[in-house]
Amino acid sequence: MTNFKGFPIIDAASHLDRQIQEGGYPAVRNAIGSLSVNSDQALRDLEVSLQYLSDYSAVPGTYNRFRSEVQRFLNYLWVVSERTLVHVDSQVVTSYFKFLKTPPASWVAPSIFSGFQNNQGSRAINPRWRPFTNQRSKTKRYEASSVSLQSSRTALTSYFRFLRQHQIISGDPFLEVRRRNTRAKPSTVLNQQENTVRRYTDWQWSYIRNTLEQSANVNSYFERHLFIIITMKTLFLRISELSVRFIDGQIRVPVFSDFKQQVQHGEEFWVYTTLGKGDKKRSITCPDEYIPYIKRWRSHIGCPSPLPLPGEHGAILPSRRGGGLGSRQIQRICEEGIMLAVQQMTADGFLDEASQLAAIASETHYLRHTGASQAIEGGANIRHISEELGHSSAGFTEQIYVNADQRKRRSSGRKRAI
Image 1: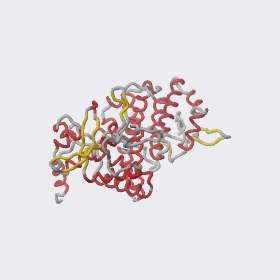
Image 2: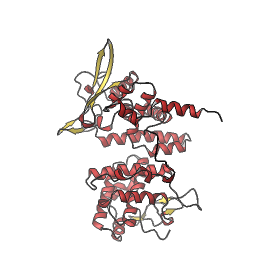
Image 3: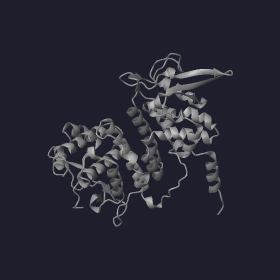
Image 4: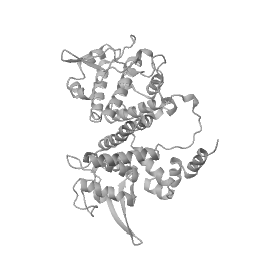
């Protein structure tokens, strides 16, 4: 372990405010000064990384997972690549994921050590800390699992998005990185693959929904988590279609009048109207089973009627400052809700399943894809679903979602006798 030249960079959530106030800690700044990289640029990397993680400090599971990945990546970037964030590109990311699969033994500790320790009123670097731990085996070399690599990709996707928004990097380094470079055993992956979609299994979704409903029944704090996640899944929504955003230089806030009651052929039904990609207007039918969730949410926030009224301009997701919630706030709420299910799975003894769900907890598109997949598999007309998804054609929808014949084939195949 003596050949490790890196160091812990970001403290635990309970000390994060102090670290930000102290400019990242003198100990970390001194360690950065000993590196071969440009110190000013590395200090800027530290500052923006602290800012990024501060958004997640109230969600312990997510904070610890993202902090771990950011520290690993910055240690690799500064120590191994001798670069800073402004120089991150697809080549760096590809090399990093190769490094992640089997890091040097000096980067791996036999157990977990805190990154920082108290020392005469200051926070000092713990020399026993390492970016990786290998608690399962004292003899076998550390090797990342496919779940671990997917978790790393998820965390870095969020991190890079933040860096782009703050103009630290100009593009997405993942765009030119083939997915096989982030898999544990790329040599075993065939070039020709069946179409798959990034969605929850029926069991995962049932667990998420039940956990959220039980949590909201016990603690009203989780009413918003329940409503947002149910709405995004049931109405096939992207985050941008439920959040505040700028359109043609004006702020658009989703309001309750976006829900409209209509009558056709003597039957009443509700639709939700939004602006999708390219600011294209689309309307989504609200299933009858979804209506109680609207009523429940409106009752929670004190609306004057159980269902939306014509011309009602109150925000669907009101913020404390007035107006609606932004995309990052909605993403954090979704992730916090999914992590509730992860915690419940862990408590119920489903450790592998919990780990798999935690790895994709921040990927909100899973809700949209799950809703569409289940609708199609349940027999809904694919053309109708395509229109409600806002796709250009039913053919495009078929390219994305697993078709019913494929599902029947796999189902019958699983039931074959030995």
